[in-house]
Image (cartoon, rainbow, N blue to C red; front, side, top):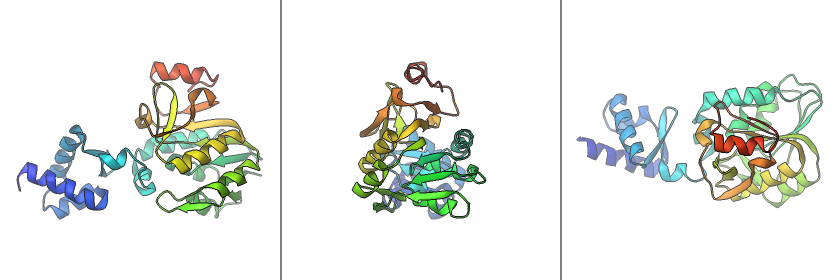
Length: 249
């Protein structure tokens, strides 16, 4: 099979399944993983696909609300470092809000052992992981989004309006250089906005791949944050916005 035919086949497979591993594509197309990686590099340069750890997703899905299992693979090492730094901010006895982002889910393992900690979340995965700990967990309830493992909607938002938290830790699809924190899920954006209103400290977790990304909906402005945690230095234009909130990176 010549190169352009193989690349057409890759795109066809991704139309059917949205995301695939390099190993699976190599097996389906009877070629080597090295060849598939070269094809994916070419397709990414053409703007047709988006590379994730160990695999690939069609660009049109990467620019929308990707399923959680895809987002969990993306920049996992960077997200884990960010999550560890965020968890170190949480004192014993705190009440914290955690959204359903893949980055925030990395925090959970670092919260085990906290004394008197209360976690309020709209994320089923967070609840499942904390079920093995002594942390008190409150779920927002609401309409369930299976692809995102998130509870959303009126019931979730109303539950959140009745509480007051010390911190909210959240992430999103991206942040523009102008300081708009964006996402492509209207329902999750609405929940995050309420979380931000009900928390004293607003902490945004953002790996460097999200910097400069845009989304359909604005969660909040960078100036509203108390802190933004990233594994890389921020572009100066964005750093000024974050410093404007009195937080630093």
